[in-house]
Each structure stands twice: as structure tokens, then as C-alpha cells.
Length: 215
Image 1 (spheres, rainbow, N blue to C red):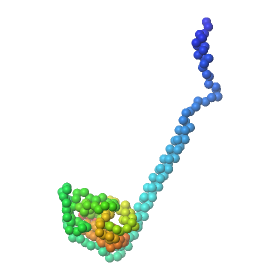
Image 2 (image 1 turned 90 degrees about the horizontal axis):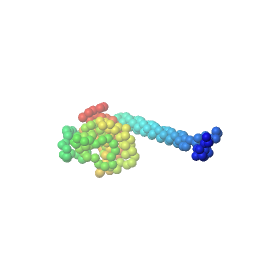
Image 3 (image 1 turned 90 degrees about the vertical axis):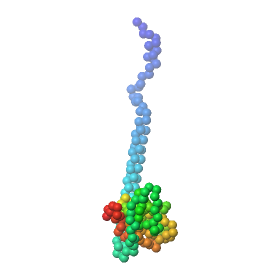
Image 4 (image 1 turned 180 degrees about the vertical axis):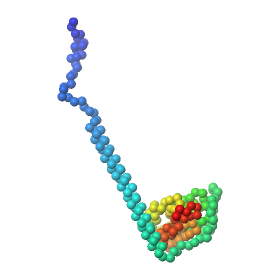
């Protein structure tokens, strides 16, 4: 019986693949290249992050060593810190204000919220600064101390940033080049910033506030 014409025609159009021809892998080589590139980028990012962490750690260690060296130097000289009569403590009611007899208070009733350690470029609320003192933080006031002084204080504040033993640096208009350091019922006035007595004061009273002494 003869084969149908339609079947013969269909078979005649079928193209046989030569034995030596290979299937094309669309995107295979490109994917491998992209994967290698992604790995390289990830490695570079990881290396950069690791280097950044290592540098930050090294800088922190260097800043603390410098601070402790200044503190030791300052302790070898007579202290100029003043003991200020305590005005007590206690929390104010929400929204309640309070007037301190001194523009730079070192004790007294205070806000329930405290100023976190760090360097500020705007004056902070006195009632919150006093609460920071009660925690054991050191509060430092500056006006026109200069960029180098702020850089030093900023490095110290980066090293000591704990809730109970940190450093707060805040501006106060009218001080000029003077710098005033305060702890709870303690105060040190410097006509010009001197790192040795400043570090000795900080090291002597940091972390020793009445609410929760940690040193």
C-alpha cells in the first residue's frame, strides 16, 4: 500500500541535526562571568567593611591610650576641681520646668529623660543634663573652644559612651574659649582647654554618679 503524500511531505521537511553540532547554552558563559564578578564585588565590600571596623577599633584604642596618658599627667598636679553643694535630686513631673540657681547646674531635681552621651552642636535642656550627671556621665560645656579641642573631646566621647559612665559635650553661649566640665556636685573651670586636668577630672568622676555607680 503506498504511503500517503502528506506524511512523505512532512518527513521531507524535517531537518536532521548533524552529528557534530552541539546545543547552544544560552547565557551559560555569561552567568558564570557574572557570578565571578559578583563574588569579586562581595569580596571587595567585605574587605572594605573589615578594614573600616579595624580602623575604628584602632582609632578607639589610640584615643583611650592618649586619654589615660593625659589623665595620669593631670593626677600628678593639684586638682582644680570644685565641690558644689548638692541640691538633691528627684524627678520632675512631665512638663514641669525647674530653675537652677547656677547657669551650669551640677545637681537638683531633673527631667525623667536624660541627655545621651555624645557631642552636640545645640544647647541641651539643663534638666536633662542634670539627669545625665546623676547617671554618672560627665557633661562638658564649650563655646568657642576651637576645632582641635572639639576633635579631642569628640574622640573621648566616642570612647566613653556608656549610659552610666559616658561623656556629654554641649555648647553654651558666653563661655568664649573657656571649657567647663561637670560631674554630680563637681565642677572644673578651664580658661582654655587643657587636656591633662580635663582628663583627670573625667577619669576621677566618670561612672560614679549617685544613681548607679559603676566604677
